[in-house]
Amino acid sequence: GAVVSQHPSRVICKSGTSVKIECRSLDFQATTMFWYRQFPKQSLMLMATSNEGSKATYEQGVEKDKFLINHASLTLSTLTVTSAHPEDSSFYICSARDMSSGGYNEQFFGPGTRLTVL
Amino acid sequence: GQNIDQPTEMTATEGAIVQINCTYQTSGFNGLFWYQQHAGEAPTFLSYNVLDGLEEKGRFSSFLSRSKGYSYLLLKELQMKDSASYLCAVMDSNYQLIWGAGTKLIIKP
Image (cartoon, rainbow over all chains, first blue to last red; front, side):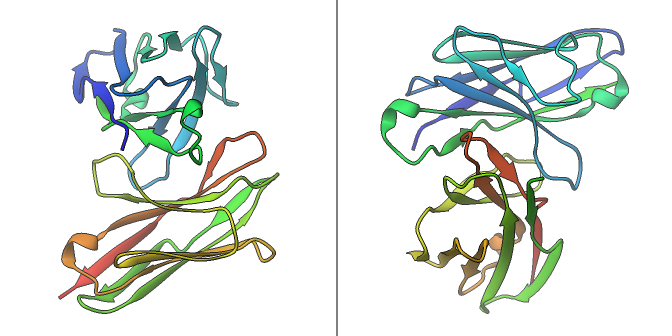
């Protein structure tokens, strides 16, 4: 199956700093990428949908100025958590969808990034 | 609104069979997915159903009834490594995945 990588896998930062997370599709072109957040013992929560070359679509309650998403190429999307605070500590997961595959719209998930804000 | 319901937690014995149910109410339907997620890891794809009926894949099978808004994931010959959370997700008319809260499956020896 298709492979999605995410970097870094873990990051610890001080409150007030910014953190960038990269999501890459390694063997296919991802026209659409999704960013999720998952708190302990809870399900995935979609934060935003990112389409290559256009602005991301944010879910209700997600601050677009705090969570900056850039999908500049068909294989790379980045999420920047600006001015991070302890409540932003979470597991961030990206997924990618290859609409050109003719498949059934399966989303391929990256391994996730564990963010801890001190 | 859109809603996916599945049990919070289930317990089963190694070697046995377990069925995890999922009911849904969504705006449109473009398929139902089951994912497995081990603690601290990202979800991994298990199955996809878009037509009514049973899809079998090794020890795992998934069933769908669109008229009832119902699916189940059946796991046979349970192994300890099957202890994980199982997430039901429905793709709505906008091709967006709507996620259930997940069912934590505990396997006992």
